[in-house]
Image (cartoon, protein in one colour):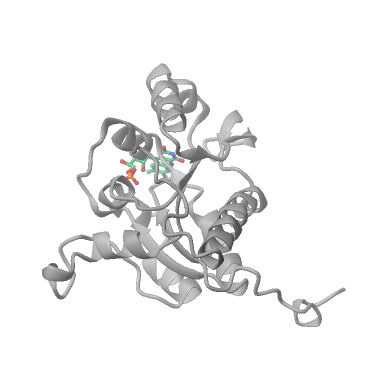
Length: 210
Ligand SMILES: Cc1cc2nc3c(=O)[nH]c(=O)nc-3n(C[C@H](O)[C@H](O)[C@H](O)COP(=O)(O)O)c2cc1C
């Protein structure tokens, strides 16, 4: 069997900066793989977690994978003058929200910023990719559908959800898109941003909601 060490690892995402916002969906464990892949390909990854997400995967796991501290609150920064949540969103090329819960999709659609993750998403200065994942009845709920459609209309990119086995024991739409599909979407945006940067354009892409 081919070992990973036999492969020349590509650093094709070197120079790219990604904020991965992890919400409280059971698929949060799959986002560990996404973070690891991005780091292995040279991207700088900062992870922010909602309180619910920290109940499903420990911040320590994401700290180890990203080799950076995990952001969990707006109120723990050593210096509030630095307004870390704003500084981080200004410094990244992309925000990936995965898994994007029904709750977080609803909050963004309604303009609610009552925790670190929703505040960062609403203050985005770069493209935002959301990978929704939830029970199929939640995903079929008219309110959730309207919220998701509203986000798409406003320029947010939704990847998935896929159809298949759901952790609640049923089969249907609501499964997190495969990590490979999420990575493809992230890669495309990072490469586009890099090209714009190299061409010295001052503003690579309009953030959503503007
Ligand atoms: C074990 C478990 C798994 C959950 N999985 C999901 C999920 O996949 N998608 C979802 O939208 N909500 C899920 N929830 C509910 C969310 O955690 C809950 O709505 C929470 O308020 C979301 O908060 P957040 O959006 O701030 O992360 C789950 C809850 C539990 C206890």
